[in-house]
Length: 284
Image 1 (cartoon, rainbow, N blue to C red):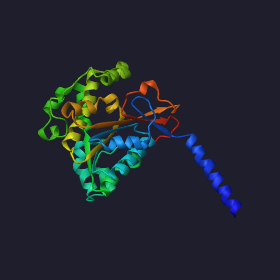
Image 2 (cartoon, rainbow, N blue to C red):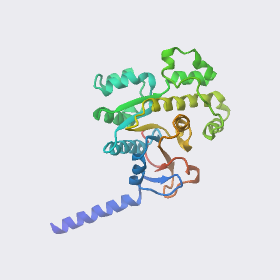
Image 3 (cartoon, one colour):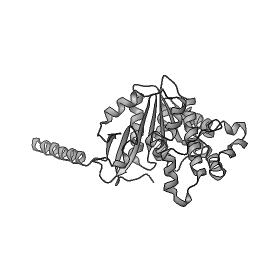
Image 4 (cartoon, helix red, strand yellow):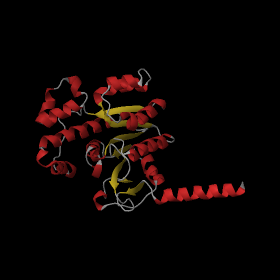
């Protein structure tokens, strides 16, 4: 029996060592230096607003969003918010959080993303269980589509109720921001100034609802596609334009074949960069 336990301990040790030799992700700071989860959490805990940029189909992004939220809630009052919910669905989302409707009704009444059940339901259910606010921060997609077709002027014709679901007009816009200019570069012949304006309406609206629901006694943690906050632009540009004195922390997610060293292209993308093995399975 003693020999059996020795063999079991040896096997477990080899398994753990093997797992450590082939990690799924590594966390880096903006300069490309490896940092621990604990160090990242120390910075997150000292923040007023945290922007957690994800790759939408990356399970490591979603798992760490949950873990960061859960661990932060042990010491901080939290407000949660997400790009994945549009502002005109806030009432329905609140009903679910309060237990007034069930998940099936939420799926029927709100415009949930296809990967909601696997990737975002755990965060929403965490908020419901712990009686936390969860803010629908994004512009309703039909209004972003209007901007994409005809530019900002299309928003002027909306009703007062519709305008309450977007950032106050006129929306400030800087087409020279590198991330906005890069959209045109990436899209090639399919790019247009209006496409960038549509992106800006999303960024501005998310910033608006983050600040509208910000509580100085809580940490607001926001989940969004990485591009919306990479290189301290997008949503963060609008946040700092209105509230430059708040303490912001940004997290982003990238994918590489080799996660032992951060690629130069990812340097300075965020305060903390979660570098995931590109062979990681995706959620869709």
